[in-house]
Length: 156
Image (cartoon, rainbow, N blue to C red; front, side, top):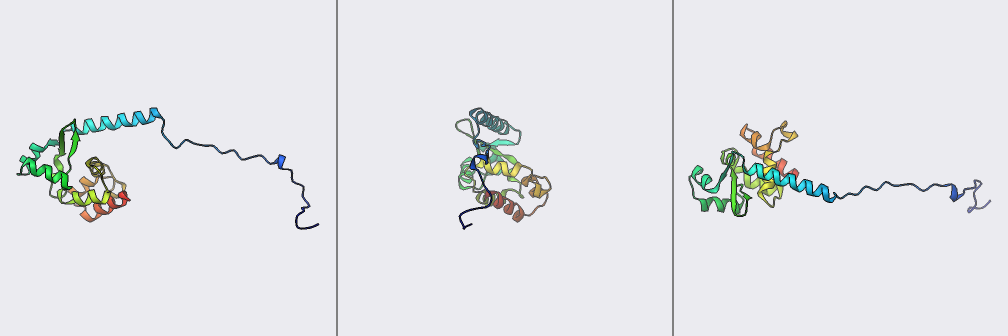
């Protein structure tokens, strides 16, 4: 017997090919449509929530002008989410002293391209905060550094 022969006879016809189950990694058109509809419904309800105010109302609340509020939104200092075609709504709670200074750092850490991302992060309960949303955790005394670390982890 040499190195190219084997004492065991193997028939390749007896070897069954493995069957791989392929799963389409992409959502169907119906799933995508449903997801977009839920997102639009969420935004509609969130924009119309009682804690959302206009830039004029925010200016009164913060003793500044609407122009300043708009500049803060553009510079990343203030959350402002678009609604309809020309308006901006602002969550009133962001002007709390425990929240307002954190917004620019959180936005940057998340790598956010719009304020909806920041708003969602701040309002979504987080397991690392005992189920509290970061905004509530800040209001209850959580350190800014801890919230920044969570935003950094989520952004990467």
